[in-house]
Image (tube, rainbow, N blue to C red):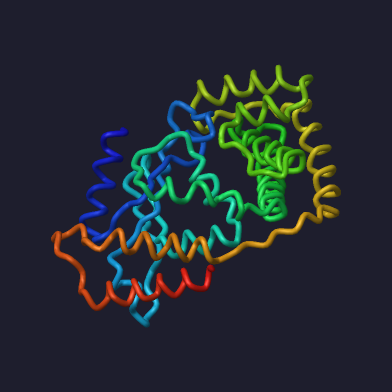
Length: 282
């Protein structure tokens, strides 16, 4: 499957006339608890030729390509990705932390050193708490439940606990979160559930695990109270993101499709923009 994914990414570069900067796996395969029949959720960040960003009309900033039932490929434009980073979008932080990488460029080396300054604890806490509450309410209230859904509640709860304790973004792997944040008394039950999740089909149903449900009830209520009084401030500077955006455009002055250099006037405008941002940053 990896070879097919890389092939599809190359095809997307050609047909869309883009340069893929970073491509990773998201979802259960990146979290470390895939089922035997889990699909592949590929996510990427891309950049278009610089003149594309000098147009006045609004243009689509996502590429969504469901390939088949087992493979889903979606990407965000660089402009969208950096704007979402400025607002501390938790999904983007997860993409950049994925242990399963299909394609990377020098872009990630430039992005990683500045990412942490854009992580907002409060944004992350509300994101993960909402995910835990929604999945628990929708999937784990019956007597018979799908085993996989437990991990779509457990993981965000543990992510919240990590953020409250460390004031940093949570790790991607469930095993790291569980080692650090899961109550020792609950680990045997979760490990049994993890074995079911990773060795049976996605649709596997089991009787509700009361021990785990009690933990989820108590944890969600406790997190609601703690997050309501959490007041760590977050201020993000646009300057590093502006610099990275312009530098990436300047590094992408050769379109993928024909190898010809972009219009020199457009490149000149970009260079003047970068000079202006550098002056403002002094």
